[in-house]
Length: 248
Image 1 (cartoon, rainbow, N blue to C red):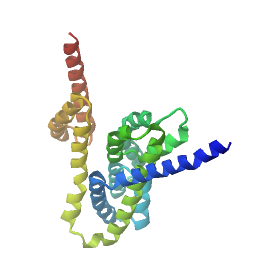
Image 2: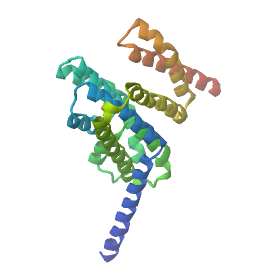
Image 3: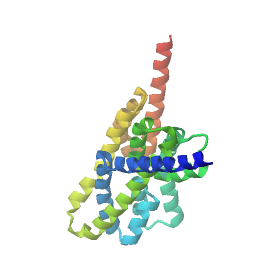
């Protein structure tokens, strides 16, 4: 009993250190780029007529930036609650593969399911890219703690950014807010490109960029889904063909 009791403070100390390391990882170039995008979102929400409390609450609860933009767009269009909820849910489906890929990297035989459910709330492109890059260097028993520090800090940091910018948004030029807002998709593209483990992933991005404008003209409103499906299927076909060629 005494030996076990002596080990518990040491374990708690290690957890605290890894939590702090996760927090520190949030203050990185990707984290700063994400914060700059939330500057643009704060201005968008203010122009849409949302209150400070609503905007900050949305940042913490919805979290993923594209889903919040969809929700604000639905509010500005006067859509009903069911339609807005469906649009936000549909835009967040893209995060499901990220959760599926990240969960095995954190799970241990002793990990409780509710911990993974809670941490899945923090999954968005920035936190996912940072986690997939750095978790292999974190001891497996400490990965949930590390990601909890990373994810919670990103959320709280951007809630603060949104609150401050919302109060000062009237002083920012609209062009500056829009430019900062569009830093996020640029960062997403470069991050996903560098983190792609297969050439097929990079091929899908190239194909999507090429055919996206075409579908925007042919099927506006369905362009992203159509371009993503076609580019993804084509890249998967290329991957299978190259795999068979290497095997032969």
